[in-house]
Length: 386
Image: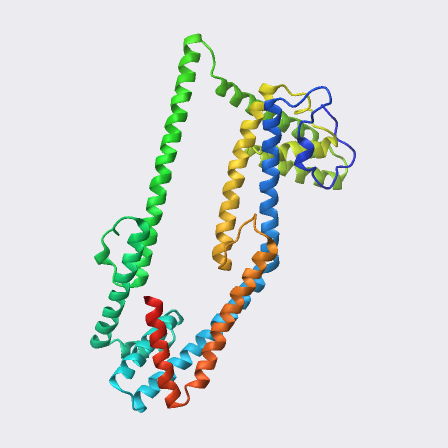
């Protein structure tokens, strides 16, 4: 067993230092190459996660704060527009068509402001939700939903389930997304079932053949070898880092911290962390991999493969969470400058929306401009829903 050096290095070695090195006389065996490939994959995924978290830390707060401010200002302008159009409906000489357009615009603004729970907005909501207005709005929504349904069914390649339940474009879109997701999940489930069945069939054949020969299955032996290897490394580290054997108080605290990392890694079967801690403690190449036989390397590769799967899942979750929070696609393999530009564009778009609302407020103080603006908004809404 390698004794603990007097002073432990502050940083753990890179995973690349754990790889089996080829020599001039002998090339790497398939088992050694597989071991190295898994280490490289773990190092790549860990790096992706660290860089993405670091990038997020630099941009997340400022981006969300800027968006929040622009959205809040936009809501203030929407409320001002709502109150202004409502007032003009009482005092301005509108045609019947202009009144319908104005009332439709008011309802749209109320919908956009509904989350604010503002008493004035609620009062106007109660006022404008009359039976006639509701019927008119429902007919418009139903027609837009019908048109959207046709496009969704064309994209899905099959009819939408129970389409009569969905009366608005939003409901129809949500239903289409759910059905698309169900299609994807069903397809993936079929693929997984086939893969599982094939794997189970192969394992059953191997077990049957081994049973006939009176042998222990190779997979079971490798699993036992992997557990034995990780247990051996853990015991070596626990012995070397035992804090009660250290007379120096500061060094005892350091060992206690390292031992906490060892315990956490052992509980998770985190082989790479244990190997790096072993190198950090011994300040040299870990004996657990130097000159290790292929069957032992294959056993340890089972643990590394589990770590790869866990890191891939962590990365997927991180990318999904940041994409939701930042409202732009976030990918670890994307260029950081490009993602930062996406954040800036989103902020610019929200700023443009806010400034456009403010400009509209200034423009419609004149009745003639108000009527032209109402027509433009009605045409824009119609084009958007088509």
